[in-house]
Length: 401
Image (cartoon, rainbow, N blue to C red; front, side, top):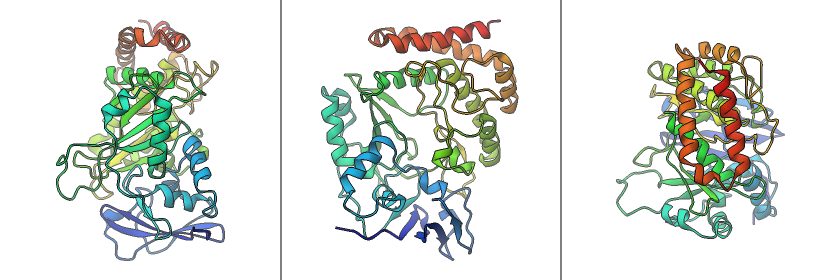
């Protein structure tokens, strides 16, 4: 059993080995290999250079997928005797090829888990005892869950028919499985309804599902291509140089600036329009958790010139649990979820939206339609239904023509 602290981690991408991440005397260092191909750079914010990158804290790119909440505590319990449980060990445990994005870390001191054929989507959705299933999935896949977030969630390989991928595919198809848990009743239904509103409003979203017993929300991960190859993903905490602890600092206008800076020219207008839509929807549905880590970009590699905004994810109503909740970030100086016209209209200018009131009207119509179509689903969660309805009606009054 390993007892020595991990001092060095090998870092690689699908484009090749990148460098070494190390921790010495309480500081973090990242050193690129001298002759790497530029396509193997690990981040849009960390271009190749001969000098070491140095930081008192772990670099945001490597912190991005570190487990939080349920997954973190389960890993602590499982590996408490394996040595100092610090960020380097966390990365070694969860940073193999399943981690979100294209950056992989490994060390001989912590071997990867054995391959697993996975679980079929239909099996997950039809399970009639969600607690037992999630516990079993946790037992099998906890170590491969390189994804952040407080909510209980796991990265689960999806069992697929043989031959769906050609030779050379880097990974299998995978699912993000989230458990409702006891702390936030109805959370799986909550996310399913709010994501359905986003989809109805024309906001790009991954494929998502609700289990038959309404206890699991399941989403296909969107950082993989059709053949299973890994795409680069970086959230706005990384792109604005902030740690996970600072994910509630900053503003939506700063996200707009980051998208303008990093997105390819052909995707910039689309990204800004999507940002406006996601912020507007968060206000409508009462989502007070739209922080920096819940927005991100996708790209093939740093040389490809195809950086674009990632699909919307993690949209939930929070006011059913925290009635006085506000926006996670500042919107033109306010954190009021049910803000007046001035702030949202000013933000529309930041995003280059020519007819914001018309777009808001379309989104309100999509939300109303979704509430109606999911009325039977929401009957068992009256607090959730009331909270979303309250936000929708306030917006309807505020932006009525």
